[in-house]
Image 1 (cartoon, rainbow, N blue to C red):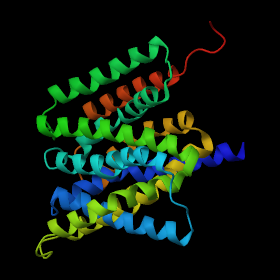
Image 2 (image 1 turned 135 degrees about the vertical axis):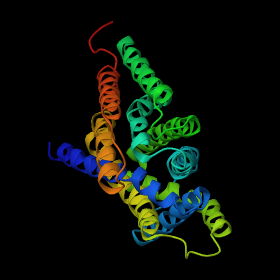
Image 3 (image 1 turned 180 degrees about the vertical axis):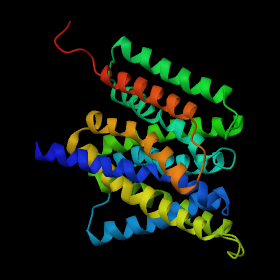
Image 4 (image 1 turned 90 degrees about the vertical axis):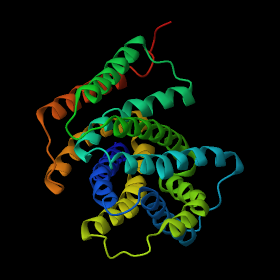
Length: 293
């Protein structure tokens, strides 16, 4: 019971940290190129992760774990940060947060594909309803959105779901914080040179808000958040603790309104709430019925 409770606490801390990622990225991308921002945040977190692994004397992962680690890195270290940084040049962080309502569902789908689970038919009903809500909102909404930004956000959610699912599977074997640390280290040989090549010639134009955004996504979103998140998944169970992602859109909308003074209208709130309800329903029926032939 204590272990399960600790899992929920760690998972909630992780989700709370992740909720600040999009507003922080929005602030940083105002003055930083998206490619530099993506590579810089991964490089900073990768160097910190490498130091953590060396200090704590962690063994190298087995060869069989390299492909899953590469998939994790491509999803949460490279794919999601880059795609969201590009998207947030076209949409507000409040608008982008609505798409995060699909992340738990996307993670569940990759869990089904990779884990061979057989959800009940009701699961797919909720899945289609949630996807239809997001697609409909993106099609009719004009405030703070664009077609290009919406497509980039959808792509970001897909690759992030893949990275979450792969990382969650590996956390059972390697440990929670070790997974994100090794994924960051694996991406470091590409991310560090990219950061150096794309680094701006001068930082005089960079605002304080952009620097704070870069610091946040580098240290908290890219590393510390995953330490708590994967630890929570390992302690409390992937299916159970994973549902905590459902509160992330609400946290993100609140942060976008409070920190960036972006407009959060009733349509955004209603669509986010409806999407969360659909994801909650799909999670409820993700596992096959027990005791039935």
